[in-house]
Amino acid sequence: MVSRNVLVKGGDLPNSSHAVDVFFDGHEYYELCSPRIKTRNTHGTGCTLASCIAAELAKGSPMLTAIKVAKRYVETALGYSKDIVIGSGPQGPFDHLFKLRSGLHNSYRRNAFDPSDLFLYAVTDSSMNQKWGRSMVDAVKAAIQGGTTIVQLREKEAETQQFLETAKACLEICHSFGVPLLINDRVDIALSCDADGVHVGQADMPACVVRTLLGPDKIIGVSCKTPEQAQAAWIDGADYIGCGGVYPTNTKANNLTVGLDGLKAVCMASKLPVVAIGGINASNAGTVMKIGVPSLKGIAIVSALFDKESVLTETRKLRALLTEAASVVLSLLSN
Image (cartoon, rainbow, N blue to C red; front, side, top):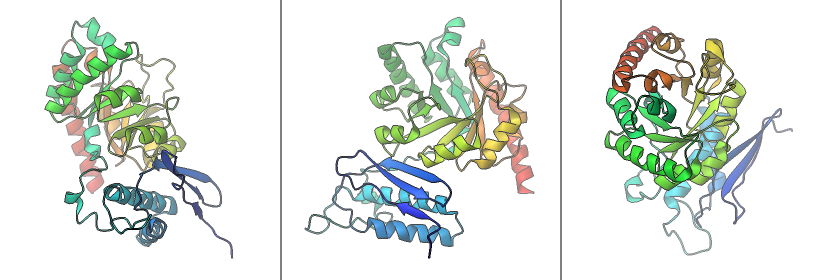
């Protein structure tokens, strides 16, 4: 008898900062990486993992999906259980009733990331703000007042101290309106100001390492241009992917354009929510949203918001366009 699938469970090395499971489906190897939860309450994790996988398979999930869901369940259970005392031996069981008693254990939370936050995604540009004579904080506030649902702070030229001060000021504005703030690339800045998350590119720190550093309760986005990159981002523990450039853009040097077909291919393959980016403005935002793929949750905008005289006016205009396009898509998908 030959096994068609093999999962090697990790997380047992006492000095490791992360747990890496290795899955082989008979054709490809997958590394599933997550932060290692330091706790003595680990008895039964293997049996629980196997039971969760079996339950997901019974629901019709593919094997890789079942494994990832099960791994997240065990990770969350360990997090809720890490500080409680169960039994007197060197190894205790974890709290299998954590979902019923979650109100008692509030030291561990998976992030409450809502894919709808991606709807109108503002990516800042300090040079554009300087051109129009406004501060980053004023630009971010205007974008939020106009209907932006999430903000990514991108500062490619700023010194670290200046970036950190700007991030803290923008975070205060964002949180006063209930809008998440992500930091582009700089995990150190995100940690220092306690931002809501980080967005990384293919040449930046891998998402699984970012997850280890930030922990389970932060949002992680990854830039992807291909279905293969989208699959890798999902395996590494990202919360969403950014796909582009959809159209040619001047905001990023040597950026490969994927077009609407490339965007659709990534959306069709992605198990994560997708936000489209690159050359999108009021003239084409509706076309992008209307590709009609459920995983496409929003549009990321740079120059069409910040390289304008009035950020507030442009944001309101784009919000109205996207809302109308989303209504059309919802109607089509419902029929």
